Length: 413
Ligand code: ADP
Ligand code: ASP
Ligand code: MG
Image (cartoon, rainbow, N blue to C red; front, side, top):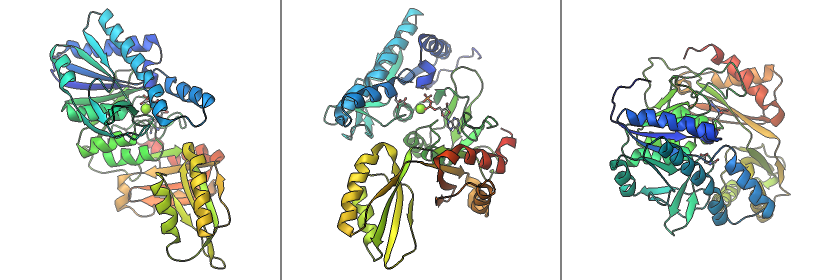
């Protein structure tokens, strides 16, 4: 790392795996100091250490399978307070002035939607005051204060969003996302070891990858970065290599047709068999689900037999019980026979902006899966992606087949 003075306002977000023990916190502290020594103002957004949030969720569910969401926020928000305070101590011990804050303390104001809150605004006065005193400011990621003065969280993986929102509010010069991989790869390198690191990726592609299962970036964080055109540098916290720049228009003349493959196994399929085949039924089903806040992803309606049909859709597994309750009441009200659910599904997707101008990608995707005897259960497409639902057990194989079939193991990054 060069020692040239840069005098920038830098946001650095450290993910949970980058601060999972005291050595890693020290490692983050060293990097932060190297930026500060070059004259930069640094705001650090930190995640909870390692699996802290998962462990808190498991603990809560043992005590109450349906915990009040307000209390879940009270509980989950504690993780980031611990890592933030420890990082501030590590920096102070090295003689560098640093102060840690909760989201509420630095005026991250959200709506009242517990566990999935949206950031409404950030009152940056306190934060700026500390920066102007020459301090490194550490902000607990993933949390805010609601308009009803309650602590809220922003949805799992939401520290990325805290970082991007702070970059927007503070008009930062640089927003870096430090994680346990060196950048964005053509697919999850934990599934496919021949995955290649990408130098650049567009906001749209990253948005599609994230919403289709690539957990490396939080979907809403990419949405906000795109909206305000804030390039993000995703990079490894344990190396000094350049990572991946997520931006609007990467400096590449020709776009590859397919940029990446993702796997998501956090959805379940719900089927309403024997639904009357007449106008207005689908509208009733999905209006009711939307009103209840159920996020429906894929939808398939089968061919009608004897004036009745089957409607299937996928929903996040984490709310399956609640969704089934709602689906049961819908099914009764429309005269459907019953509700069937299947949690043994996985969704594989191929993503790339080049698909806009190339035909045959879907056909190739289906033939690759067919050749490898992987049955497709549901299909959905967008302008820049194709997703197939397959049996959960075939998910990883499907990723590997598509990654190789679209030559992603051969791309130069
Ligand atoms: P953090 O704790 O830093 O927020 P996450 O666990 O949320 O990190 O995200 C990093 C993980 O995302 C990686 O360890 C990797 O397994 C996974 N991942 C999934 N898809 C991709 C991809 N296309 N490129 C890089 N990492 C990916
Ligand atoms: N600690 C939170 C989670 O595990 C937020 C984050 O890591 O981004 O979801
Ligand atoms: Mg994350």
